[in-house]
Amino acid sequence: MAQFRKRFWKQVTVGPVGESGQQGPLLDGRPVKLPAGGLLAVSSPVLAQALADEWQQIAEGAQFTPDDLVLTRITGSYIERILPDRAAMEDVLHAYGIDDNLCYQSDAQDEDVVSRIRAWAAEQGLHPVVTDGLMPLEQPAAYSEALKQYLSGLEPVILGALGVMVPITGSLLLPLALVHAVISFDEAVHLAHADEYRQLEKWGHDKELATLLEKRNTDIADALRFLHLAQGRTLNS
Image 1: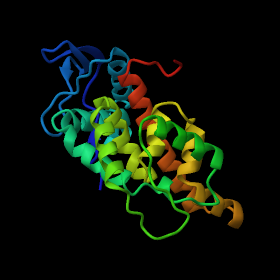
Image 2: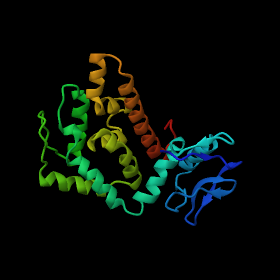
Image 3: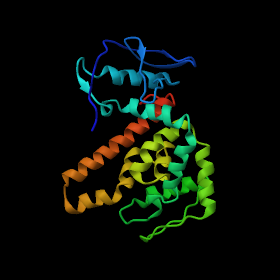
Image 4: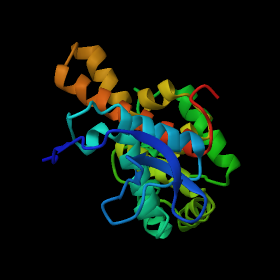
């Protein structure tokens, strides 16, 4: 159960945090401390401003939970989990990659979108085995090693975004294609949940399922927003 806190600060500004030239939100002049003791500090000025805006939007005297500070939560995980030990995240992503949902073909999938992802993956030297059956696939050792090499070369901020997206989609290749602009956001979420959307089309509106899909898609969008801001890109760039 999320723990409620109450806004205690009067003013939110952006300023230097730490000794490495990074910036972050300042609450009445003080930096935000993360759960493990680190400070909320980033190299991207646009991300620092977006983090400050997130803290500012909490109304005076209002209660809030970490769910109200989405960018802070993703950025904090990036700072305290990925930067100190990126290998641990690479291992998690690799495990999804060798049993990738995208390798199990379904009639509900948009074949044009799948083909674009596979063509892009092949350009990266990634050639997974695919099946139209239900039995678990065993990817060859060469593919496993290629995935490890590919993940080791990614920017840490991309690992941070993938750490949110991959468990939601059950796929590594699909979010990789999204963050590299091979496919659009709409294409990504409809492919990720192709069977669920097919179910909604066939059986009509299911409020519980629709709410679940909306939450998943929002989480993917938040992770993509974090990545773009961390890379110094505005939402319109």
